[in-house]
Amino acid sequence: MIVVLKNGVSEEKRAQLIDWLGEQGVKVHISQGEFQTVLGLIGDTTRVDMDLLGSLSIVDSVKRVTEPFKCCSRKFHPEDTVVDVSGVKIGGGNFVMIAGPCSVESEEQIVGIARAVKASGAQLLRGGAFKPRTSPYDFQGLAATGLELLRVARRETGLPIVTEIMGTSALDLFQDVDMIQVGARNMQNFDLLKELGRLRKPILLKRGLANTLKELLMSAEYIMAGGNERVVLCERGIRTFDDYTRNTLDLAAVPMLHELTHLPVIVDPSHATGLARMVRPMGLAATACGADGLIIEVHNDPLHALCDGAQSLRPEEYEKLADEVRRIREVAVR
Image (cartoon, rainbow, N blue to C red; front, side):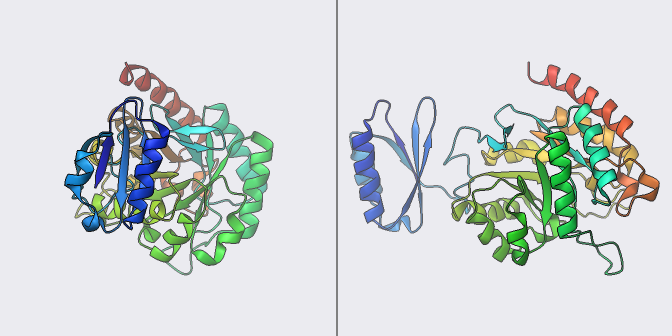
C-alpha cells in the first residue's frame, strides 16, 4: 500500500501519521520527492483502513500495490535512487564505468590494469578474489590475498573496488570493500542476501542465469527489507537455446526494470556474450538503451588469463570502447 501526502504537509503531522501507521503493525518507507511525499507501507496492510486513511486532510491518495516487491518498486519510490560508492554516483543520470580483470592474479597485474582503465575513464575497479567456477579444478581465485591486492590497487589509483562475495562466512573479509558483488549463481542465496541487508554498503546484484526480472527484484527486496537500500541491479545475460554466445543478453530488461524499480541498472556485456569481439557492440547497445553503467572485463594479457580470457578486452580496446560510450551518452542524454 502507498500513501501519497499532499504538498505542504508539516513535519509534525507527517510524524503523527507515521506513528499511527506503526501502531497498526506496518513499517513505513518514506520517499521524499521534489513535488510529493510517498509513504510505502510494508507488512500486513489488511489492518489499515484505506477509507480512513484517504479521508485524512493531509492525504492526497491511497493505493494498494499488487507487486510482491515493495521496497524496490517505483510506485513506492517514484524518484530514481542514486547509489554512492565511495564518491562515485550510480543512477539518476549518473553513468558509471566499472572495469578490471575477471580474477586478481598478481600485484603487477591488478595495479597495471587499474592504472590503464582509470586512464580511460573507469570510475570503479572490478576484480575477483573469490571465483565461483563450474569446474572444481579451475582457478578459484586468490581469496584473502586477492582482496589485499585489490586494496593495493585502490591505494595506487584511488579507484574504489568492486568484488564478488561467495557466502556469509566471508563477510568479515569484505569490511573494507567499497561495493560487494553478488554473482549470478548467488542471486537466490537468501541467507547471504539477508546478511547483506544488515550492512550499509553498496551491493551490486547480478541477475541469475535463468531468473526472471520479478525474481531479480525479489532478491533485491531481501536486501532492502533488511534496511540496506544501496542496491544496483546488473543484467548479465540469461541462458537460452542459443549456442553461439555464452548467454543471451536481455537488453529489454533495462527499460523494463527502469519502469518497475527506482534502482540503478547496469549491464555486463562480458559475461553475457563470453566473446571479447562482442563486448563492444553490446556495450554500446546497452548504453543506448538507457543503462546506468557498464561493467567490463579488461586484462593485459587475455591469452594467459587464469579466468575468462576469451571475453576480456585489452586495455587499448577498452579505451576505444570508453570513448565511444562517452559519445553515445552525449547523444542519449539530450
